[in-house]
Length: 293
Image 1 (cartoon, rainbow, N blue to C red):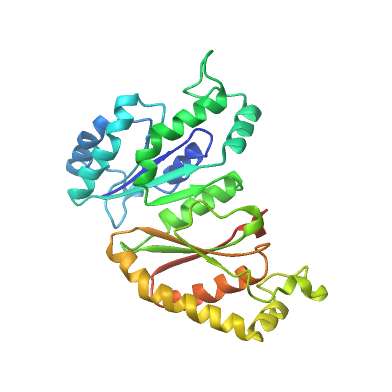
Image 2: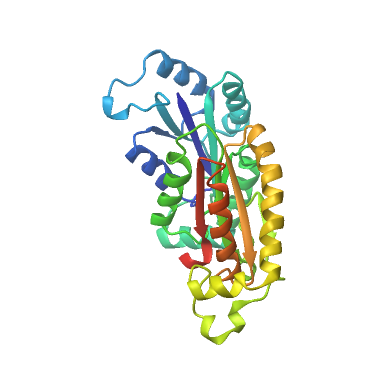
């Protein structure tokens, strides 16, 4: 049996994530009280769904939404309940979605929906801050944190599908993500490497509009001794420490590689690292954040 908990602040895309999981065969329940979770798991284990279209190698699959719409006391006990289920041997992944507060405010403004914690005395930004504090224990125990600030709904669905549904083995899934420091460090990064000290193809006129996936940029970077030294050092670090991350029962690890704009050096390095570690790990994924803007 596999259980996925979807949580996060309102407006971050939790409903879209649950819909995607339902589309691919998970039995989904939104806004379930955490106090009912052990009983639900017991019943599903004893009486798994009979629908053969929902059969999976890992047994019945459940996806649950737990967030600020639950009673305060119920949200507070959710981490304890989830911890007990994990200790019982259940495969339980906690996925926490969030976005920058200004982005969430804009989304509420566009949809004109009411925040579950707002009222006549609590404005939207204050409600979002209260919600962040309320959900902090769930965020702290999350296996995967996804920042949806710059993601469209389609991109979010693809990301959840690749990182959650695409995780076919019980081993750790690794995401190599390129980004530009001028757009901010990804909040879901577990490890961050800075390539801004390497020669920058941006300053070569004929390379400026290309990316680290183009042969001309690849050739330029491979010709720089610093690039090879940086790749070798990062590879050695990851080869030494990623097995320790996996042994600590982590389900997901995001390795973020950044340069100034996130289109040349970091893209090239992510492509190289992914090729190297795809031999060692079963689930290696790539995301070039700035190419999605």
